[in-house]
Image (cartoon, rainbow, N blue to C red; front, side):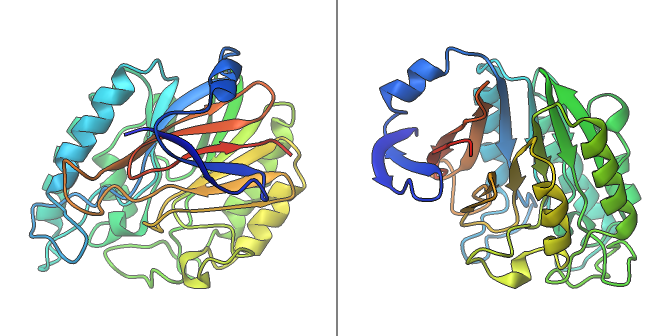
Length: 303
């Protein structure tokens, strides 16, 4: 479930680990308490038959396993990175709301603050308002598609890239998932947030990917990712971008910022397969990812 033999690469500022547990020097470094939170992404829960590698019903068992682990792990919060549920082929709102309500109940069994990021499948036959009405975040962030919060001295910024290229929000399947964008109003809000909290180490959470400069397919990335990254790179307090959407997972690094894409929970059958992680940000800015099941461990060095 947890891994540790060195597998590959330090070249981009990260160690990817596998099979056992974290190296002893990493465990020793964790004695300094930073920020510690749980992450899942792309559950795609639905009461429907499997399709290819996607086992929709199994996401309920996988979510339950993740929440049990999170509840015994002394976390500051948990967050899911979008595509919480899926839909049936008839694309009616009522079934997908039932799926959403069911998986949300399991997610809310976490004994602490929890947060959501909007993914494209969350609007496959719903409006954003409908999705937000059936989910809750901690405090004043409920009902908002993009927002920020502080935890243990760190700033966390949640972005919503679920907008069409004309600036209209994704709604009831009216979108092309390969053409997500962050509109100008939200981009300006992001700049203001970063300026107002320049002394707080900061993490960015988003569903679609921002590292279009990497080897990942452009269709997986936010269309105006370059503009967003330009804003992030002007702010030295930004440590990492935590993403979903690309189920195999991905990592890249540029200008001192890590871009970590978590593996999708939906892939393959339970109980043998699952994917979720506990991420710890150390006081020196290093980031330790403790992966579970199919999610690899990583050590992402600051700088």
